[in-house]
Image (cartoon, rainbow, N blue to C red; front, side, top):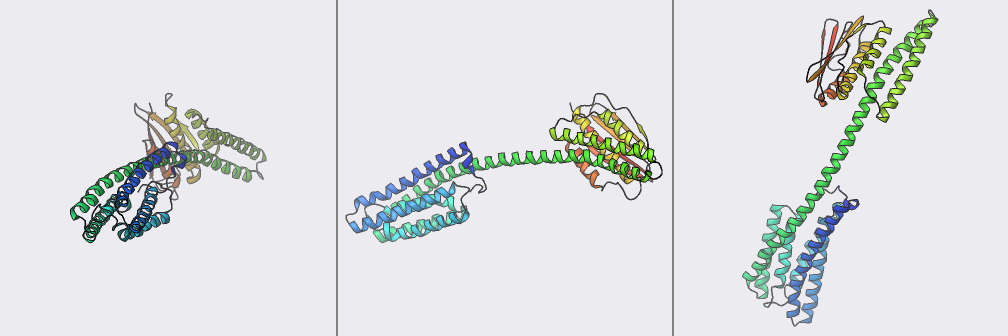
Length: 384
């Protein structure tokens, strides 16, 4: 059966489809009750009629329970098993209760057998359903021999009618399962979209805060070291820390509210200023003026990560940043000296995350280190 994790009670259209499926299946159930009941009208023995009526009604009740479970995905598995076990027990009891009714006049039990064959595809897989069908046909033939009925007639009703009922029941439940699975797919797609949005937001916050907090920490450390020997410069550094903290807070607020538009020129100027204030000679090329916002946003993320790496993982004296563009691709190259074996390299966590981000956007990140010179090159498709 279809997914049991789906709870379509809150879905109006799915709930209506389930009700229609239940109504259709119930119609078939009660039709299968009416046909064996014909035998009750043809038997003159009141005792056999009473026992037969009990057997037919009990069979109809357990059959209804099994059909209900088949189109109720949220029903606990133990209740499904109990309904199926109840049907099996009652079906066995119908042989002594229903088979003697109208013996030789009407194939009363054969209609019960047809219902069992019709139910088999809803309860078990195809190989087991075939086994159930074969066993039911054998019982039907045995009942015919016991009650003096025509074996061919019993087999025709149990087999022929049973297979037709099975086809109808299977199609209805298959169609219901298809609807449930479609709803599952829609729900999974919505969850995936939400997860991707959370990941994007977390990545943006990391990009903004990671760079800003690294610079703030370095500036604060510098101010602490300068305080005993150069109070005036220490004060300027402390003022710069305050400015950087306020700028980081503003960027985070803009990120949270989704209002942040990337000005790549401002980002380049800010990173260059931070590097220079930390003693790194920084050369920055003028970025292309016509970069689309999505492309600029990806390059800005590369720039922040590259600037953070220069400060955190090297003792750089110089750094060069260049952005080029052709018709389809924008390329950012960041080169600095002072790199050592401590990183960053292609195994850096920050670079791995950046590579994943660029790959998702159709871009690529490449890094290499030659002696003490580290080169980071990122390519991003130019969004139209």
